[in-house]
Length: 336
Length: 273
Image (cartoon, each protein chain N blue to C red):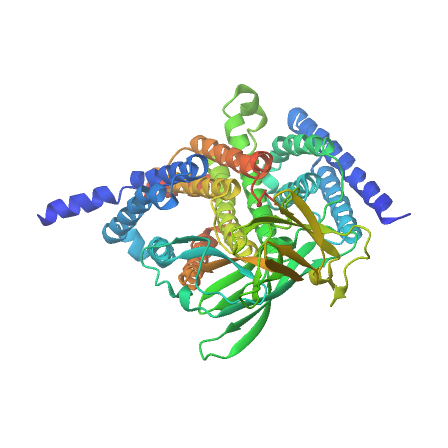
């Protein structure tokens, strides 16, 4: 029995299987890129092969135990595969939209997560406080900065300015502002019988063209309305806030379509709609956020660093010695 | 004279220098003349002129000029020439490899001259030190693999009637194979560091370390092919000629990754190396 196990391990430790790992990994990577195969599925075979092959090689081949940097490098590779697996089990990636001055209530527009993710994001306390564009004259350098308020583990409020290149980390979740953002006009709806109700509509992504800055809305009286933001081209440029353009000072009006009517309203103006009054108060904004949770990242970075250092150690020994000449090579081949 | 004029003078001086160096390197190989010092001085001077041109462009446009296609190709020529000059200086017994590599640089140069020489603008996601680190390591990787390619070419040409006579005085194939192995070991280290730095940059820029975009996938395939080349040599004791073919295959994959993918990819990460 022990003999059979030993033979089996030696076969598993074969360098041919290692070569097969390189080839199957390349095929798996191409399958992910070209055919949209799930990365976890595509890499299952090569990584299983690598784990079995490396474990068997470390157990059966004396060279691994005699050569410390070689051993450390291969152990780091094993650890890396295990960490990738753990990372896939607990990762989380999602997206959500918040209007200005509203708080996150755990609702996501898109979501993707591993089966063991604890889903703690629902308890995050996070609030959008509006954005500004950093648009320098004559430069194609348009960054959006979003001011957010969030509460740390002690319940203390914090304020951060985040962007598509600068996240805030709340309870291990990294939250980025994105280029997906737009305007949201704030209205009140009042009937004779009921007090005014305040609400907002999120118009389309402001980087879009055509009717991008538009949205449809069904009023409480079931009337179908359609809104579109129209910028005032002749107005002076928006005010600067800390060197950045303040989107809230945008000169504009709203086009409202209802049945066969087309009405233009400005902030403070009202519309009579079948016994109700719709008042346009001011223009707010909304922001799309990306939220990411990858708790294995520090471990993966540490393992990669260990692997690279061992690789430097492993090859450093041969890189700085003189090139072997014909006679030395002859002796070396006889010795092997 | 303004910065643009100075940049153009330095740029064209470097291109003329590289072209002359290619001609001299080929004549040296074919006619077996000894022009090593002249060639080294010419390549080093041309590379210096190219460095000045890139420096002036950096100063003029206000950011590292590695963004659009013209700048990418120019930066790649600069990196490959740096590797050739360094290899030429450090490996005096195999200097003939320059005659095999410089024509490749010339082809990339011709490609660069067909691309509009426009100024680039820096996207917000490129405002990070990790971009420099990533580009730096990938350049070092390509340079090490390029020198390995040149020496591998000698090993293979030696098998021909033409090369057998001309390369007879060079070190034996086993010594050349040893040099190739070291270059490929360096290539593996630099490529690993380049990919890791790129992943850190991607996380800074887009919130994820790896997204399987075409350039990332082909970078992984390039890394796997270097690993396979080193593994096959060390475990199967293959001949220098087999190893040379593997190096050529690896370089072809690397070349496709860094010069071909930017044309076929519509992803955000289009290959700035």
